[in-house]
View 1 (tube, rainbow, N blue to C red):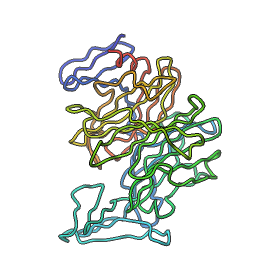
View 2 (cartoon, one colour):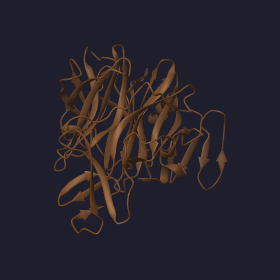
View 3 (cartoon, one colour):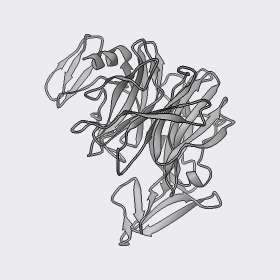
View 4 (tube, rainbow, N blue to C red):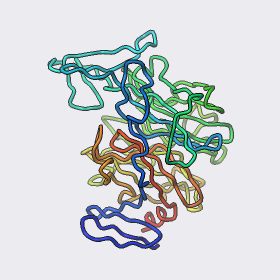
Length: 374
């Protein structure tokens, strides 16, 4: 393997092939788009009347109609007034209702910018939905008026829908996403052929579960999915594998990747987008976080015939929050991906930075595999 090296705070060694960034002896092999951030909240108008866009988060990615598309997670909230904290929820009639609390109320816990606690009940500070944007070049994105947003629907999506992965298959597009409500968090499924008509199948992985990525082809005649059930008492936030005859009913669950003590992924791990088939195995780019909620990306290599077998795993991240727009934002020190496109050896990765803006980067499959062998 040949690499170019950037030693942070010291000197640069370059060649024409790759770029490595060392940060406390950790390697970042992602080539960020120099146009980053590609999308920021001020680029689009609010999609919910009376709200403002607070942030864009990690999009699903797919090709359609000769273009590259992002299915953005858009988070909105009411314009905040001094001394008052307001946030939206869907009420029992399926309409958006705004709840407001005095910020000095002793029953209010607003210490986390993402979650509000009030009198023992948790709420989200924003409401998320999914929004389509397209691009001819994969850099400059615009909205398509003929393709409407996808909003939460029903009691299990009362706090919105989040973090959608898009699996492009021979029989259309399958969307797996997080359904959020006061009851819990689970995984929903939607199918579409044309991005105008949708079949909604409800919750396919029950609470508490998220980070679900479908394989884009069958393995040994079965549909497969990576997902992340969470256990607060025993176990933790780990990556699991499941199989299904129809993508609706899932079984034969097995845990394939746990958190690692004293590592960059010691607190939680979760799948990114659909695994990539390579000659060496299924390559999965996953996210990991430490106890300071610093999110990085790493790689898993799974056996082609039996993806429950992990062949290799990144010892150090392949991408870290080192750029300014990744370190400061709505929730800083975060790089998080749900989607990518593969062109030969190149992975075109789209990701959310600091839970606020959308960015892009390129990765080499060969380079990732080389880092796993090392």
